[in-house]
Every structure is written in C-alpha cells, then in structure tokens.
Image 1 (cartoon, rainbow, N blue to C red):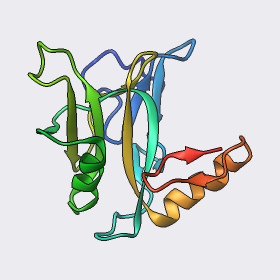
Image 2 (spheres, helix red, strand yellow):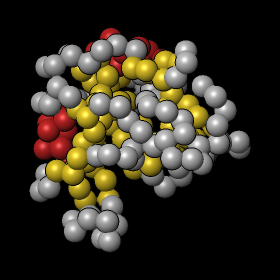
Image 3 (spheres, helix red, strand yellow):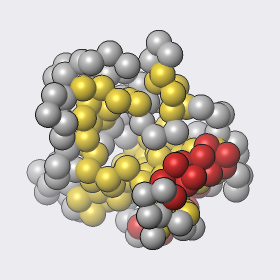
Image 4 (spheres, rainbow, N blue to C red):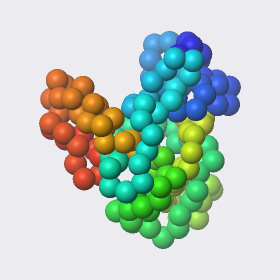
Length: 156
C-alpha cells in the first residue's frame, strides 16, 4: 500500500483504511485482504455458513452503508450473515443528529470505502471466507488469542 496520510475521501482505496493511530498515518489493508496494487479480499466470500466475522476495533465506519432499523446486535449479525452480498456490519453508536436511534445496525454490500482506524472508533465486523478467518486465528494465536467465537471475535 502507498503511504498515504488518508486525509482525502476514500484515498486509501477499497478494502483498506487510513490508520491515524500510527505516528505517521498511512493506508493499511483490512484484515483478511492483501495488497499488490491495492487491497483485495484474499478469498471470495461464500454464501451460507462458510464465513467468519473478524472484529476490527477502533474503526471509522465506511461510507455508503445500509441502515437497518430496530435490530439488536445479534439480529444485526444475522442480517449480514444471511445476506450473501454483505461484506461487513457494525452495531454503531451514532450521534442523535445523524440518526434518530443511536444504537444502530449498519450493513455494507460490496467494497468498503473511506474507512479509518481511530482512537474512538466503532467495531467493524468484516466478513471473511472460512480459510481466511482461520489464517487470522493462527496469526493471532501467538498474541494470546485462542480462536474465533460465533460472531468472529478473537478470544483469549
């Protein structure tokens, strides 16, 4: 990835984010994606149960989301799980000025654009194919985590 400072709208490209928590902000690929000439998901998502969600904490949620009203966190997870086009979701606490209900289910279909990592961001739940999710578990095992729970969160 280019070492872009992430100030311009969607400047890091799809499936990437601007990490402003670093000493020098720069673009990074989302977990489960790779970079050659831009970030791409490593494996095509599969419709059905052969996917995991990986939690990316502290994220500025991507642009162009679908707001699903009156959903609990579990219902939001299920909404994305059962939609073959859903690439990520967040159960975000938006300001009252932005939405009438503060705790809200946000879904993304297709590419994720204008994403960032911040100190006070939301949890973004990124959908990955099973084998990609398992690679992340293996990578994180050395850091004290044992695996993914039912929602795709790493647990110690």
